[in-house]
Image (cartoon, rainbow, N blue to C red; front, top):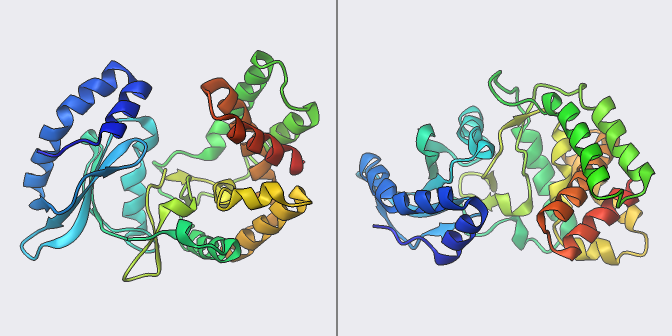
Length: 300
């Protein structure tokens, strides 16, 4: 049986309570069942992300390297295999097998190494933008539309602002709400990653870079711009003109991705406001909250 990493088990119980504890208790048996069904043998120690374990394996009679990913059942993980199915290995790891009720997938192995290892921020943004361009394909009808969530997000922002007693200047909140109202309904039916950051872009053999961990949303590719700004974020915070530095990075990514710079700016500002409020309500580290505040204010 697999050994579940202790830090992953502790964070799962902390986040999910008794449901998490019960799921963790079932995980070794579930992993053994899937390994047997998909003719795999473990080849290295278990690793993990925030919500799932990754088991490096050798699959089939030729013992091809792959990974078995089993995630805690959560709505945010439902459409990950759908995205992989649509991409069919073009710009993303290949999906070999899926078990949706168990939130399990057998995936192509990629790495070692990711875009997080790239020290040149412009090079990382350019590579991510070119990858985002490839991933922006027509989305199937069953994927969740970002446009359908924007009214709900506006209500949540207003409620959070009242609960938190308006921690941000009104013009910052107003700009975010204007984006949700004006850009929210006007979005293409395009498959987007939903969490495209440098750690979710791994080195590949058949292609230079391969995406992992998609959310499987349909909407505006500019929605993904904010997560890429986190790479070497300390440089942005230390820049003499933070707004100019952020806009420059957004321009590099937008041009490579083939998206409108202004839409990228507006989505990034709106999502920064959401992150600033969420962080206050859910106990994010102070530096992360202040970074979101600064980004939200700089891009008004």
